[in-house]
Image (cartoon, rainbow, N blue to C red):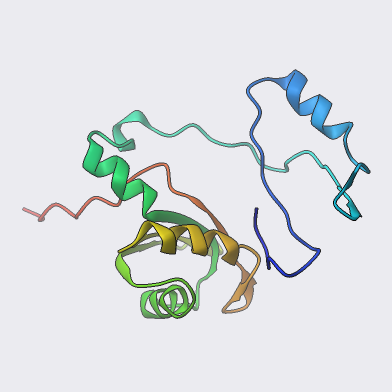
Length: 152
């Protein structure tokens, strides 16, 4: 679940194992959950498969993934220090941060590894929060942030 826990404007992305399950979920749109009707829409973007070489290779790396989030739609004007301060002020201490981007794309992405797994869980609620001038999107990371290899 994403969004402010005190707001009725919460949202979630759900990946189904097959198309039949996704179609059945779309039929649930309008169903009352709690006190409010649920709105179910198809995703505008596909969940891309991850290159297997990036996936965790050990228990330590799986534990790193539990402490790491993947953040997209980051305003190009936002610095690495800004991203770190944003997440530390809301979620907890950042252990490692990799901010990536290039001149071809309007936005940047980041992998943020926290000291504590609970901080990564808290960060998932930051989806939709404005950072710079854009609403960021936060999801669990499927890959660990590996230390950079020294350049030859």
